[in-house]
Length: 223
Image 1 (tube, rainbow, N blue to C red):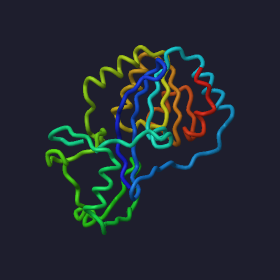
Image 2 (spheres, rainbow, N blue to C red):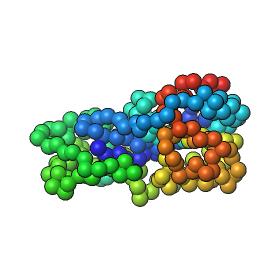
Image 3 (cartoon, rainbow, N blue to C red):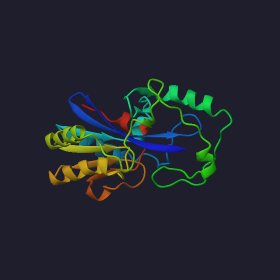
Image 4 (spheres, rainbow, N blue to C red):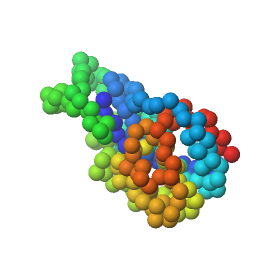
């Protein structure tokens, strides 16, 4: 099982959404959703009030909303020519090149990575770009990677235009997303966080909900 982080942006009814999507692979394709306590009706009402009072709400989403909501999987990217390959297509190529390969995780790290024996990793055959033969990399931002400067500036601008910020399904462990929380704090924006388990910004939030996004969000009236 391997998880990776991505950052994409889209506009939804005048609200900008930054998507930090962490995809989880288990065998072929699957998703990992940690256990969570039952929904607290009072917390749901608090989130509804937070959203209703917001006039320019900025929403930053992560793994808790991506796989659970059926958002298409990321695309593994050629570092030489820029050709993109859908994750499902690449999975088929993985299976062709590694028909007998299998691995069992030997522990799960807090960031979602798993530990595999070196011999299992070394024996795995990675396909190259079908267009130019170049090396492939998931079109996501890994821990330690940098985000395109234009995208960073774009999101900073949207945060500064917002009057509140909602984090959905992200632990904010990666600075790529955490820095936008710091920008919101500097602007003294109210921050609400919906995520299973602790996040890097719990102490900065006026509201924290420890629930599954797919269970709670359908109960919220966006208007």
